Image (cartoon, rainbow, N blue to C red; front, side):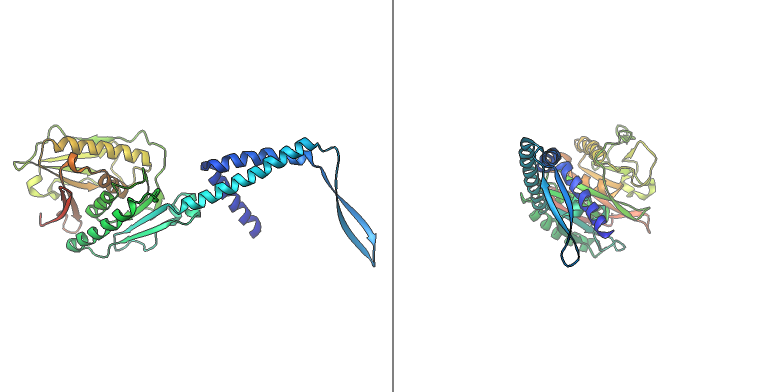
Length: 354
């Protein structure tokens, strides 16, 4: 039974690889065409002969019939051999490609597992070895966090700009400002796209975002045209996807100057499960920040959203288009936002006691 189970797993892997690998697709077609031709061209008959040499002995013999069809045999053999060679090339290419895949795991919370969520990766990423980069954050102090952030950004920059890093997977949890700027570190990634894993807090499990668009989810900007900046040219943006933020929890100087952004659904966790939907929502949010930047000196961001959105929004930050932005950290015990990371002219600073 174990052999059958292993063969089934191997065949499942083959089918999954064949689905996306062009060499395996062609090789598979050659095999399914060649083997039947080979079978009809050569008809093999096993003959059981019983002889008496110091007892009963069963001997096996093979006889090839002459009416099998030599043309079909030759064509079938050629197609089968080509199919095997192309499939082998496809498997070798898939193995070599796996060496260009990198999985980044950000452990930024104290109660977070030390082990990267490999089981939540797509099948091919699980089956083949990946380059693994763990980004560990072992402090809750803002000063220590920004020192660690500089180290992590340098590490990320050295890796993601290398051409051989063709595909990137990312999973991570951390304080909102930290996660935002880790995403910012991937803005120059050579890879055209990053496969994101999100964490379902209710189930306690990681999952890979789907490729299909959730067309019923859209961004809902409540009061962009009604809200005016402060006398100092500041404006706040509250992204309320998972929780509503009470007015009295914002810094006092910004109250009454907050643009509220939510989804056109109820406020809850993990509403976005599609990477296509996530990119669409992030793009709309980026456009809002670009519009606001034309009217103000600084934008103050308060984000209550899933980790993939925070990461993606950081990755999409554009220095020239969005200007000065402050990303705030929420203190659940004090029910306020006591500090933020500020980016201005590509420099990241810690702003405390707001």
